[in-house]
Amino acid sequence: MSSAALLAVDRLQAWYGESHILHGMTFEVATGEVVTLLGRNGAGRTTTLRALLGLVDRREGSVRLFNREVSKLPPRVGPHGMSVEEIYEMFPNLRERRKSQGSRLSGGEQQMLALARILRTGAQLLLLDEITEGLAPVIVKALGRAIHRLRERGYTIVMVEQNFRFAAPLADRHYVVERGRVVETVSRDELAARTDMLHEYLGV
Image 1 (cartoon, rainbow, N blue to C red):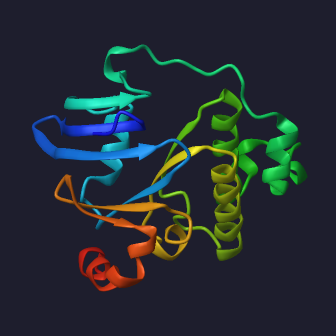
Image 2 (cartoon, one colour):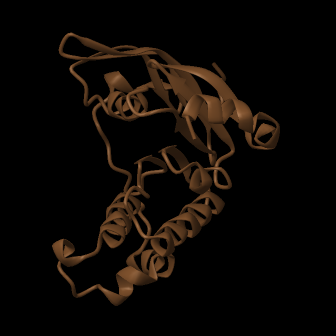
């Protein structure tokens, strides 16, 4: 694993009760990169995000953030989050709906609000789980623009995303997950040449 990686995951295993879901997830993400975890439903992608956060019954292996083992650190919130004005600039819909209750927002606006809350904390690493699921194409496009801008601002993003057409132009690298481990790594410039292999794994 590279010592320069912002996030380095090495032989991560995870369980829900007796169910052994992750069988040695190994991948890394450099500062400012956008990567996706691709795979069929049940491959272990969402469990990987939950395991990174310690939200599984048991985990083994290494999760290093800024070269420190995070499983031994208490959760911390960064003090320098994005300003409300910057967030409104990124998500104009939220400016328009700023007097609405959160529960009255559409599904897409709720996703934007969830992202905005994370950005306010000053977090530099975003873990996004199926943020486009069930959303109208116009909202998906808006989220794509927002992620592109976050990337330009140096944020590091790990996405679990079923919508490959959404993820493909945004990501620097794709990790294909099957049965709880990474089985293929595809960089942005290899994408065209390896589309058939991806379709085979993803069943699309």
